Image 1 (cartoon, helix red, strand yellow):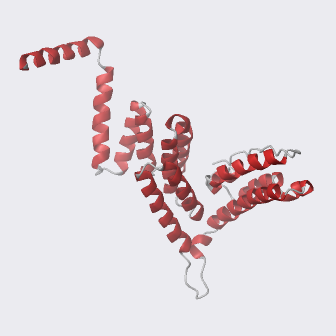
Image 2 (image 1 turned 45 degrees about the vertical axis):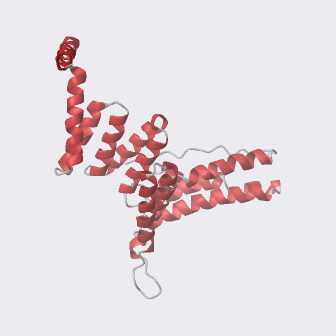
Image 3 (image 1 turned 90 degrees about the vertical axis):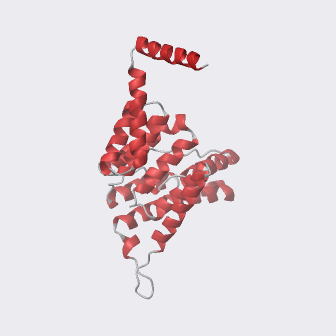
Length: 262
């Protein structure tokens, strides 16, 4: 997979410090809702060299020294926070690439699994938020989980689903793109096909939804819910494709049958 081209973020160094603080605070809050992959705009197969290159591109744009001449402590502080976030993203992804998450040891020589355990806690927390339809809170928790355990790609599917639910019309393309990237990266990722099917069904794309659920069922043949979804989707598609006169005839039969019962 090729690495995404890093987008240059316009750095507006003007005399309107209050406006800059507002802009960069908003930008920082948006970055905090993104995974390290998204912060640095790199793909899941990015090498350590590519990750470092992406970091350097963004770090140069938001180097705190560019803003020291303003003398505005609040502005320098938010720029430093953004710069630090880029650094954390770079270090986190490189750590994942070298499997440091799994091989790091504590002072007693035991394998340190704290990142994995914390990630699982955050994942569970996100699921609880989602069950309560608090999808913005779910996104914050799942992003933190992903950044602790970037190699667990199933978490990316949860993120796509939570984002979709915050604003289905706006987030549908981005959510489907993220899920498709997971499928391209791992052809047998059943969870990706399941949530792709759900999003397509909710957006009215029944044919593609049916195909996604069928792919999912091949990977999980005993899943009763998927079998039900396929049955309902198949019936709905058949109903929509019936000729108008057949639909009219069926409705007429139902109408007269109801009259007899009355």
